[in-house]
Amino acid sequence: MPEDESKLLISKNDSLLFAESMTGVKPLALDKHNLASHKPKPKPKPTPYKRPVIQSKLTLPSHDQHVNNIQANDRLFFARQGLQHKLVRQLKQGRLDNSGTLDLHGLNQQAAHQALDEFLAFHVDQGSRCLIVIHGKGFGSINNQPVLKNLVFNQLKATPYVLAFSSAQPCHGGTGSVYVLLKNGSKGK
Image (tube, rainbow, N blue to C red; front, side, top):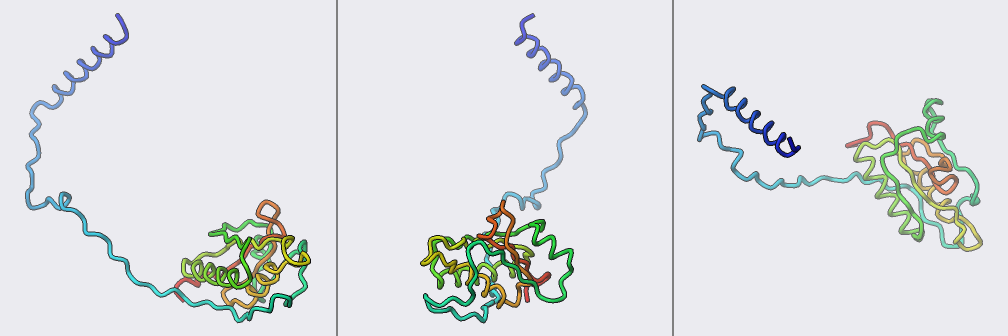
């Protein structure tokens, strides 16, 4: 018997078996008062929300002035007092789940400052714990001075919601980026 015919026979047998098993079954009565599923749902209305204002106390230096003399391959690290050593070690090793990444390549100081403030404010509002900020090494800057790296270092230190930061592992950009640890439970504050 060809394969198509066997499938056809199985289908007929299945149909007969189904019909037999449904003998005596009555369809459910239609409840006309409970037809809510047929009505279109109203469009959701966005609830206005206030984004927390997190402005670091950093004032931008002039173009030629550098707040720190951090070099391209210098490793960055900062931690507020009272952090557990295990948490700091996990941050340095890149073992904390990261909730977002911000790449500042190609931005000037003012745009990078604003982008970093907005990025931190958004993630504080979301209750995020760890972030990655890519600042680059500054090889494209005047005199190969890492302007954005210095800016990020000082801005993160001046932001109260930042508990710690550390240069990233090579797989996340090495000395061209940092892991940032935010205050736990800072959502909504």
